[in-house]
Length: 234
Image (cartoon, rainbow, N blue to C red):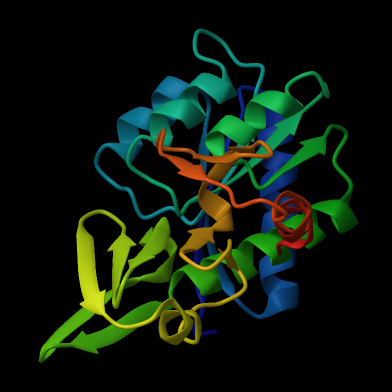
């Protein structure tokens, strides 16, 4: 069992936490992976421990809790963590639209069904694996390495490509050359732009809005293709 998944369960109902924890452990056994599960009774309780330990891979999060609800907690979490896979577990379907703001992987409705939970955990595991991929490029004798999931978008000007992530890098190469190093999370939007689909919050016929507030121009005729790519994204 080389793979370890650190999974947090945050729910104010003891019976729900215990049931979810047993299913998560069963999923880990079936997948032949080690799972380390920790239960939290409230959003505040989780955030207190998270301040000291940010190593969680997957968060199974109730929405209706005491003083701080799950959506508010997820917004705080996303201020500095875009890799943890957030799965909302709720008795209501009213909150689905708000999940887009916090890059929620999925919503699971109570009462939980084992098969649905396992499918969502499998999907979370695939995304975590994709997040481990590192882009390595060499330009002008300089090597640049960073996790692919940190690349928000790339744009070309003449013979140079600028990679926009935590800090920006400009390299002498074509967009086509860069594209060969990327995976299915990235979409070529015309001749001068590649965008990370997982960082998109909204698309209009003329613009792409990223989660950090960046607005990118969308070339004519690309709107339908981009929406299809988002829908089909793993």
